Length: 277
Image (tube, rainbow, N blue to C red):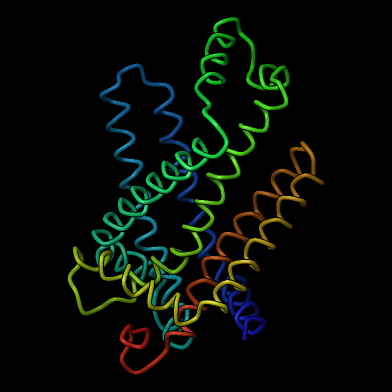
């Protein structure tokens, strides 16, 4: 089944390049707003721009994910205008996506905090290392220079903290892999309740297909690892960097398409989201 889903997802992306074009245009707008945040001197204006960036992200993903979701049904998808699907998705999903993103961000922060607490209990505190770096940075010493001069034990503490937080976030990403497909798939509840009901649906879907999802998650990470290796091989050449950027856009679009297709394939039944209960 996975091979067929990979072929289907890749074929859909290649047949509909506008899916990637939407993503490229979004990145251009996002980077433009981000550059203004770094340039403005007023904190109030910077906060307003950050809020605008957040709303821009939520609006984009509300429409873009709707396009990806509806591309699962190729016959119906070809009959519709992709722009109208995008705008329909923005109007229909933006409230749920905003709440979902906020929930996801809060849970990510809690997972990172809990992972750091576990790391501190098992491996030791970073307080002395952080204080030393703050003192060193006042003397224009970079973090790499400061880190290279640390003792072996202190380096092990830093590495252990990094690994603990990364593992915690990796576990969370595995659990929440199908959270946003579950939000868009939920039809019985209003926009304010969908993100909360989707958590229940997501857990039901995860435990019903645990080993399949585990293999699916490992496969995605193998793809990502291959992409990192490819980036390292390309070096700092400008032309190769542009090629890699295109490949990266294709990869992200393909992975999100693959996630939605996997959810739709495993969750297909006459009762919609009831099929995962």
